[in-house]
Image (tube, rainbow, N blue to C red; front, top):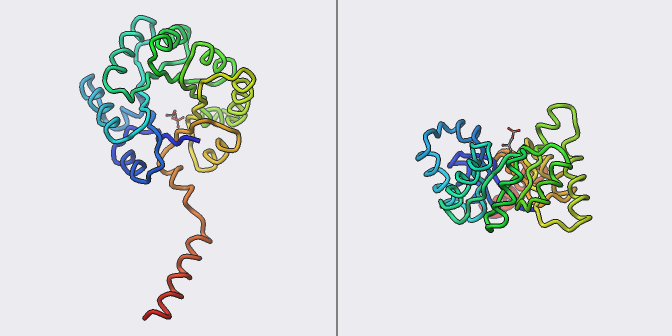
Length: 218
Ligand code: G3P
């Protein structure tokens, strides 16, 4: 499973990249706003900076919601850097735009996906990634992980190339469950990724090893 980090925070992106396990980055307008990035030039420069930090795909979301606007914006985003993936919302014009970008060889990430029917459409249109938001489904008392399982089944039935990018991952168990049900990619916060490291028996065991070593080497 690929690990993407879901943030526009450069320090967190650098920390995840330094771990050597990062495969890409996802952003959205809310995450850019959280970092105080505003104005077209600043936003575009921020995407380029992120691309220079990481080796993998970097999702940059269009703001337009009409077909022509998404095409123009997406083409501009894609021209910024070869690692940019154009992130398009799951709406009617979005599906048309994904089809267009797919025919041009431009990578896309279909975002705001909350049902397997939406994921089927994204795959039919040729999306590179589909982003089901599992945390937001959990928020409304729906089993978000079930959606990843449903999409996995459908995509496997027809060997669709679209990669399932589990998004709105909120905590470490989400990451483990994504791996169990066969998500191709998960995107989550740095805290959830670092949570995978933790086990008290590891900490206790290491403390004991070091203490025993010190006893005979002091
Ligand atoms: O990857 C999508 C993500 O940014 C949304 O996460 O936590 O706002 O639901 P969240």
